[in-house]
Image 1 (cartoon, rainbow, N blue to C red):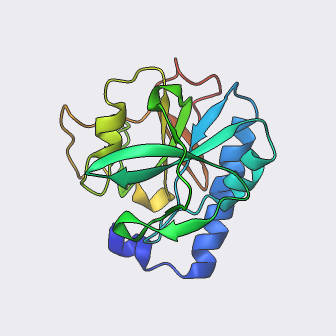
Image 2: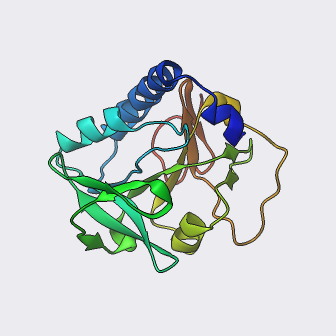
Length: 185
């Protein structure tokens, strides 16, 4: 799945990322949010630049993950943030302003694959799982391409299930109690 994601041309990634961004932005404007976690894309992941631009023009604050000492933390960013290459080759803010992850209302998380039951296959480090497994407040949304749907992987008790996943063609909601919009794709 990672090879397929990586093999997309940059124009296809941009086109699909724009479609995903439209899907996300259309829903986020209808939710009462104060703090949203996003990510800086790499390795063919869905790029969230359209989402960043929209959030920076709203009162919603934005955080991105950084990894320090085998632990993920979240730091505030804004439209003027400068980025440097950090852990795992991922861009991260040059200035770090950490926030308590329990303050995050909604997480947009990258993934390698997702299942029809709402399981998420990440890169294997378990950072998002460790951070949010016992957090029932934060809405946990996977961001993917349609082709990343797969029921050919297994999850375990330490894996944080998705509340929803968003792709270029729409949303799949797995935990409707946390999200106030229609669960149909």
